[in-house]
Amino acid sequence: MKNVYFICYKVASSLPLEKIAAFLKTQMTFSWKEYIELKDKQLDIILKTDSEDKSVYLFKYGCISFVNFSRNDIYDFLKYIELIIGKIDYRLFYNYHESHILETDDDLCCNIGKKSNTIIKYTNGINHIIAIILAKSVEMFVFDVKLSKLLSNAEKFIVFLQEGRLKWYRKKSCLIISKILRFEFDSINSVRILDRPMFAEQSIKAKEIYDGLMEYFEISDRFKILQNKINNLREITELYTSLSQNQMEYRLIMFEILLLLLFPLFIVIENLLQL
Image (cartoon, rainbow, N blue to C red; front, top):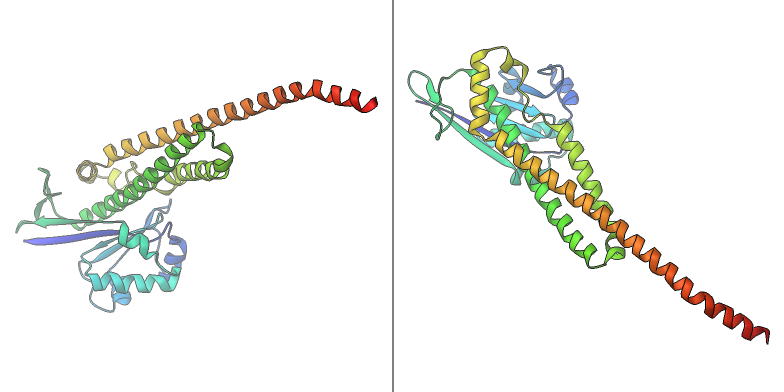
């Protein structure tokens, strides 16, 4: 029986992979620069110990997946990385993480997860796949928390706007809308949630394992939920724009009415002054 331990942490909004790769004298895994894989001698140097069966994956969107790392190993690795990229965001580290255990039998056969019936033959390539999907899962968790906060703030603001408290919350509304737009940009550009890595396309078996793990971690279903939340944010933004325009139009109309009402009074005052 052999257990393989995986844990992924969010440590930054993004990681400068080119800088890390240059410092460690390693190559990017793929041309589109999704992540860096470190193992063997590279980890021996960083951890100052034998790193057999251990590996680590650093993703451009700020997640790091560890395979068979102890807590001390993770701490030592992060301290080493801080020498390259600066301070790790430990608020993200403590709040956003996910783990997985792969249990194999004497024949190195295993289920991809405790609730799965998919039996596979264990190879080191499976570590690769799980590390990638675990990172995507953690990043989706980050997205979900951000979206929930944006939705909560946006919904409260619409209530304020409907109550006519436009002036007090105009700056706040601009901030909310800018965060929504920024979130959509980041979510589109930072992580290819549903894209298979190139290596998973090159083998039917790897593709099956990758798709099975995507289903096990419910990546597609969770992505649909995120899309629905984004659509709700867009609808709220459109509602805000509509209500805001109506408020402005109403104020302009009331101002025009006030001027029309005051105009006869100005004439009367002017005639009185001429007497």
